Length: 465
Ligand code: ARG
Image (tube, rainbow, N blue to C red; front, side):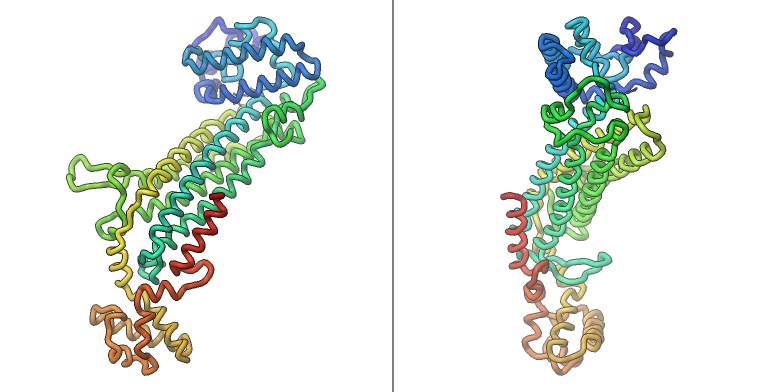
């Protein structure tokens, strides 16, 4: 990038009597980061020029020259040969100056009836719309992978936790579907956010609209927007759509971070519930035995910056008077980093989830510890006519006995169990087993393998499989 391009004349230089201070030039420039908008900037300019020709502001020949010139600029940028200039401040003026160098005076007509204020707002929306579509696909891939894994593990029994203490047995498939549900809500939020991204600000010009006979509906159609925005002041200042996207991203990352926390716990020697393939882990330079779950750890860590970006954008907007302010230039880096981070984390997860292997034996052994079927015994007593609070008390005593004896309820003899209540019969062992426990929770949203399979079938239909 050229730093001090003294020869480049500022497109706004007319009323200035001295050159911009060298530091101020660098300080105010955004081209270092907004050049990533080049493709959408050119697409927006082509639509704008096409519309200007349709309404008679440009001739057909001028429009053709502009489009041909812009196509050349795009090709040069994509070839890597384009010289970005800091003194031309941003992506918009760099591209316009290059166009004018190529086609002469006609290039200077492109900016008729628009401003960088509505131009940049349009560019970000076009950019974000494309990225949302990529992210939506990646999210669907992760969801499909979770469903496949849940199907494989529909019968696998693990301890379910509350307070991270053993609570009741659940199936691993059921646990995976809890993760799935979070992603369903994320996908819905993303689709909803896209509706408000896909509104076109172009035509608002600097803030008040323009005196040319523009056809905003036409430009909106050419660019695939659902509609043109209603109010010119709001159009150039609104960044709600970016905040909403970051809100979606912060929640998605919060979910991925929770998954990550569980994977980190479960891959530890202490839990040993799952195995991640070596290709998703790294080693230690000093401890030869280590296999670290770096991908989940990093995803958990990256959640911090995405949450931070949401707060950055909210704070960026809270003090701004209408309409456009230079503050808005600060919207891009948080938004871009959010997009990049979410895409990276989703890719890593969508690749990794299908490769998760359950250690069913360890899960089962863990589920048998901690008296996970104690509630089942209480429910059994209730079905024999004991009031639930009394049943709770009886089972509590049986558990205390098991703790002292270091034995699970299902390992006690009938006579031992009958010490606590004489309504207990031989059939009690049907409910004290892990299988009996999970199968008994056989209703919509329950952990029974049959219900897990039904939930997977409904989810697949919802995913459009
Ligand atoms: N680089 C600017 C931004 O990102 C473009 C709009 C500048 N408009 C202006 N009037 N200075 O917001």
